[in-house]
Each structure stands twice: as structure tokens, then as C-alpha cells.
Image 1: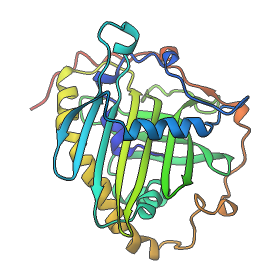
Image 2 (image 1 turned 90 degrees about the vertical axis):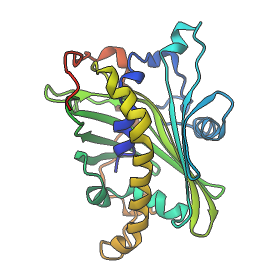
Image 3 (image 1 turned 180 degrees about the vertical axis):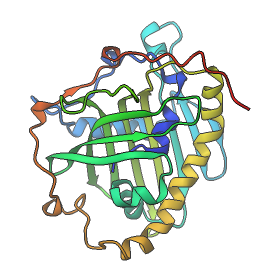
Image 4 (image 1 turned 180 degrees about the horizontal axis):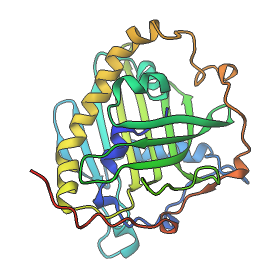
Length: 286
């Protein structure tokens, strides 16, 4: 399953357009496109930090922040991050982690998915995947090709992804190819059946969208998305018991039947190398 789902749809709104991912650093393994330990640690630091974040939504169980930027810095001003956190009191961290990985279950709870599949494994804890999703009118549907990597350590779960290029998956004319500069999840247990669930994204939707979409997405969609993922976690154990309960290749690499791909075949997808599709002429529909 490709991480993001509804949340990726939310992040890919006009406030995150015109991102220059040349200015964003991602710590990679020496001589490889795969993230190294420093990349996971930096992502964790961002998820836990509040110093440079402005609260946009706050309830007793969930919060949404956007990262504050230096208005005097023109490069930084183009780069926006959104972070969502929910305190889950009735689902374990391990279950939420399984939900994010299980591609078969995705079809049960994500009404926006058009296509979602894993293409190849890059290592025991990294793969290449494709995800496309429908967007509410008048926004054009999006797709993304990402390298996803994960780490389970110290009683915590981290999944990160970023957009890559592969010659077999070029942009299509009927979809807007979106960009994940850095997107992921940080899940930390708070008890045997509870956890904190944090989602952080820095993404470029490409295209050009009306301003009303930004306001609606940031103020309304984020809390609803968090609740949707939480509900998926609540229902997962019962569903999994009836659907290949012993199959979890994200935990047991020997179960992974995807073809092996050399990571050297991939390169990071730059936002400025893709055409912007003009959607600005669309008007809000009542």
C-alpha cells in the first residue's frame, strides 16, 4: 500500500504549490537513493517538534499544524509542510502500522483510491509503488510514484516516502503527476492498545487550484481524514482474521514476492521537471 491515501490528497492543495525540492535535503545512504538512519531520525525530530510549527486545528484528541517559514527567505517561503497528529486510545501502534502497509485492506477503507499497487522491492525495508486517487471537482485527479522505506525500532514505527522517476511509469495525460518531497508517518505506542499517530507531508500537487480549495482542505479535511484512518484501524483486526491473517510481508520479508529492483534504476523526481496543469479557471461549485 502506498502511504498517503486521503492524507496525501489533503496535502496536495495550492498552499503547497511551487515547491522547489532542490532546496530540501534528504539524508540518503552513501551511493544509494535509499534513506539512511539520519533520514529517519530527522523525520522523527520534525514529527515531535513544535518550535517552528503553527497550530491550525486543535481538539482534545487531534491537532493540525503548518510549518512557519521565514517570509524574508524566498526559497523557504515556497516550502510548506503540514503535520497532523491524533491520540488513539483504542488501537495499538502495531495495528495502525499494519493498516498503512496492507494494500488489500486499503480498498476497504479508502474511497478515493483509483489504483494502488507495489511495483518492486528495493530492499528488505523499501519498495517502489504507484498510487492514483480521485479528487473532488473541479480538481483534476492525481497520481504519484514513490520510493517508500520503513523502520521499526525502539518501540516505534516510521514510514517515509518521496517521489521518484522510473521510465516505465511516466506521467499520463489524464492525471496530474503530483510530487511527494517527503511524506510519512510516525507511530508511537502509549499503551498496549493506544498510540499517538503523526502524519507529516511536504508535497507539491502540481497544477493550479482555486484558493477556496486551500481553505476548505486545511480547515475541514484534516480532522476528518484523521478520524477516517482511526476507524480503519478499529476495523482492521476483524478484517485481517478473514483475509490472509499470516501474510504480512512488511514484517516478514521472506513473504515478499515482488520482483527485486536495483535502486540505481531510480532518480528523485523534481517538481520543476513536470508540467503544471492549469486548473485556475475552475469556479467553486455550490
